[in-house]
Amino acid sequence: MIYEIVILAAIATFLGLRLYSVLGRRSEHEEEVIPHRLDRKDQVAPGKETSAETRTIRQPPRNPAAQATGASANETAIRAIAAADPQFDLMQFLEGAKAAYGMILEAFWKGDRETLRELTDDDVYEGFASAIDQREAAGETMDNRLIRIEDATVHSADLDGRQARIAVRFLADIAAVTRDREGELVAGSLDDAIESRDVWTFYRNVDSRDPNWVLDETDQG
Image (cartoon, rainbow, N blue to C red; front, side, top):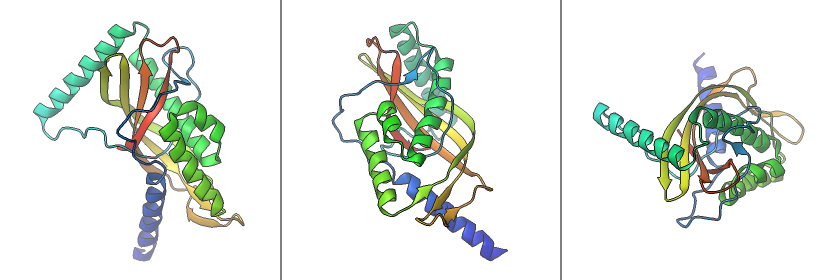
């Protein structure tokens, strides 16, 4: 029994490290953002999801007073975004974020660079594409399944001039499997889902005629 627990722990650690290696940190200067398919309202895509990470986003406060301050700051930012963009609706945004989370993870697992290019900014795309290149060079494939998204909540929000950024914390269950060139199991199991916690930041210029948001950063939650 102890031996089995050790093996499962090793598998979980291996998967966590692979997911964390997906993205590098963003550079200090901002790249030109190409808005794509995370719609505020009408263009919510069907959902999927799992994990990849980058720049550290502000950590949750540790005491009730700080939590209240953080919540108040987020509420103020969300109200500011809604005032700058009257069509913005938080609940519809979160539904769109969940759909994008699943689509991007599914594309990464399948090595679908075209979909990743449409849904992410340059830096995030390059991180995913690099991880796919390394996986293909090793002759490995990912046979992952997004079982469910347990929760998706606003982690932080900000309106800097006309640039809106909303970080969403996702809690999801994912069954993860890695196979070698011969299709033999390298790690993981489709029978046991692993809890994944991610913070993904979405970006949009509120003056843009394009209503879509783009994935700008990822991090562990």
